[in-house]
Image 1 (cartoon, rainbow, N blue to C red):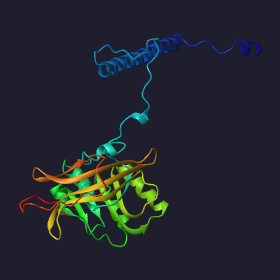
Image 2: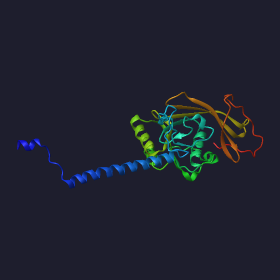
Image 3: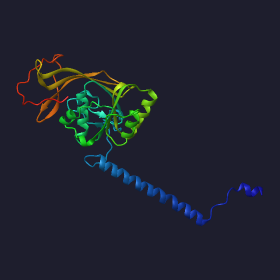
Image 4: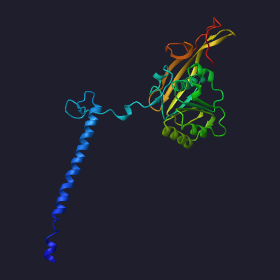
Length: 284
């Protein structure tokens, strides 16, 4: 028994040895061919000239790849004049935006989303200017309006986030607890929808947007109609300095358009009386 233990394990039979020596090379060769095909497919799709080469520096090493933070995030459209003031030139999908100020810009944001075919909803905003939104190009058939959302408008907004690109939620004077805000923010992020809250107090939004009326044109002494409205805009993100600018909503080509004004414009635009009753006006 001692001599047998010293001999070690018995050698495999010729049949078993043949199986072992045949299977490993076959599996390895198939894997290598599969990897080679994947490399060729990736090279042909990622190289403009079909060389299949990985970008390299002059020293022969791989060229550095831009970090993920520099890649532009998917955004919802905004009025073109507002885009340069926003860090991503639009409202980032899945984010929470806090807005305060004139309802005219709120109507412009809804028009910018629904006009190209997106879907939006407005919750708890009984004084929303639908006429102004339509004049700015909004498609009212793609806008759901719930002026009275009952006792819990946040629950209504949570349901609408399932199928909308933009949900505008009026908070009134409500102060939202951080725990409740995190739940709704996570819902927006998971659905890839943008939640825009106005009024009330929302803790730590991703972006804060504020507008203040800078002046009107078209109003005379006791008469006239508003032809344009100018707004001072301030945008604050979680990082970086605030961005400021001035926009104006003016009738142009049969609809109301937003334009960027020169920063040297004075704080209050002098009133200009309306000359003709046929001139267009901006709906409030």
